Amino acid sequence: MITFYEYPKCTTCRKGKKFLTENDLDFTVIDMVKHVPSRDTLKGILDKSSHSIDDFFNTRGTKFKDLGLKEKLPELSEEEKLEYLSSDGMLIKRPIVVLDDEVLLGFKEETYKNTLLK
Image (cartoon, rainbow, N blue to C red; front, side, top):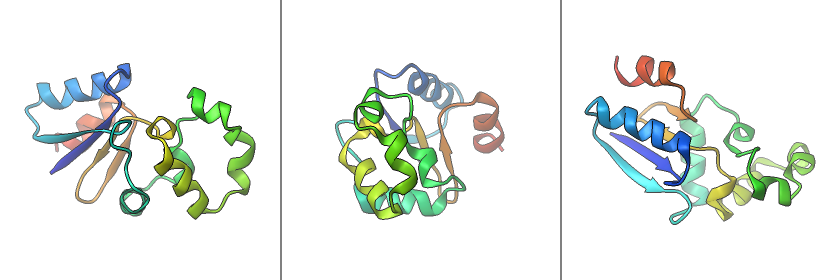
């Protein structure tokens, strides 16, 4: 099963969702801004992922910049980072595709093809 975490107004999320739809893949959509993943959910996603927790931050977002996280991030524990991520969906890089044993961050068509169409 594929879980697709998105922010519906995000162009990159729309591209990812379009790819899934055009390739007839079954997936569940979660609006990560309206339904911010809990700390435990994020920890579970992180544990499946080959990405570091820092990769999950939307470093280009206004919220990230407003909170001064660029400077703070290196000093924070994983627990503190999870607290930030679970506090506001706009802090999370998007989209996130969660599979049984793998996690895709962002949208890169080649990565989607290689992972989802195998």
